[in-house]
Length: 283
Length: 321
Image 1 (cartoon, rainbow over the protein chains, first blue to last red):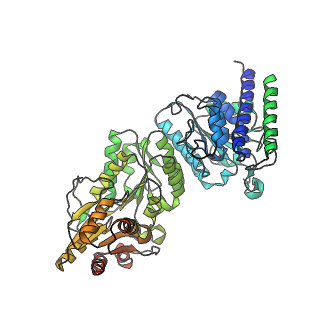
Image 2: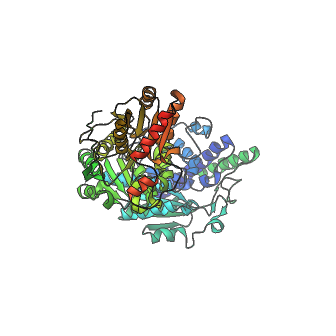
Image 3: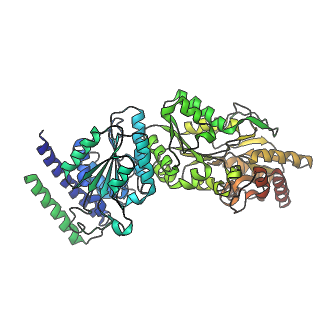
């Protein structure tokens, strides 16, 4: 398949995930829309093209792993895994209902395809690093991907994990930083800034750093992953310059961490996402 | 369970930590999934031996306990059997959220080892003196919490914890310590060990207080008081039946621990007693205080962790019958 055709398929897949994510959170009426929507293009590239997975055998030993250290983006993961056939899509519409297998934050004991449990920020960086080390010890030819939020990177544990990954030369580890510029209380710049940029921090820790100028562009993300794969001896950090709430009409550009829009706003957002999907498919 | 009681109040020629290291060497040779993770304290518990024999499976995470526990959980998710060590204060307080969420909540049975429990932190002082480590770990659903006493018990329990497949916390006295059990003694997690039978009072102890309990039994016997002595090395799950039987047999209980009594072994046992067979109880242990620096002998006196304190508590409990 030509690259252009591949990228077109990924753009379609990303928009399908956007639509499903909105339907999933919309089934409840409120949730973490902002940070779910910003990482969807990266999830589309991973699950649509890059990762070795088997939806019928989620714990396949030679699979690639994906850890949402920013666990509140769970709904985006649930939409992605549902679209890949890990479970029927509508299962995820039980989000946060009593005894659901689809809680706000990703849980390895509940959802098929979720590799590690996250929610307490910073912790997924360490557990993903441990998983990368375990796979390396066992000589597996696979990768562990971890998503860290720009707000989450306030946590010291992120940097403990970062130094460990370099010390143990975990080149099978790829960390995406969702640089969407906002955390719960507002702009990261105002709440807790990364003075010289998050990429500069990772570089100072010894990581290979790739900046995606548009972290919502599947081609840039795909190319960055190829660079990561070609880099040996150190882990790679891919900084995704993203828009929080990307594609959700009520959240896009507002920086909102969680949203509880009206019924009309949900309908409008879903209708817009459907229209976008049709337009992208027509391209 | 089969054990030999030495109980002569004499020090072992070996350090307790070597009970752990010997068990780990044995397991790591047989089982390629077994790993040790440390936080820049390999030299304190002789796990340099593990690093030498199995460098790929002995990981030094540096002075970063939270990450070390998280990495251990990640390793566990790839099928490894992981023991992770730091001093008890850091292995509990410092890395508790990671132990709770990344490991226990995620059903990844990491084995956490905290050395220098309570007054054993001695010259490292109050900052390093965990009187609350077991309290934290007992609060985690389905966790196993053990407070072993000597080389043989640590050696056995290390292997039993690995076999259990359960998230666990083990306190470990790391230096040379009084021998209570003979080598090869076998213990079952969740089962207390009756070291002496008696009828007037049951002394239930663990860790450094087991030998004090045995001394107290001898002193009480000399005064005509018959004491039952139990090593309750498993704090969770607690051997409730043995506690109930002992309360019925003796009609009075004394607990003894190197930990805060109000959130430790004493209060856990009181929970069982009050719901099943209320009898007078006295608790020997730390009474809502922080640790401090000093020789272990001084600290034992300071916090009331001696055979004399157990004898006094036993008489008081009996008088309340």
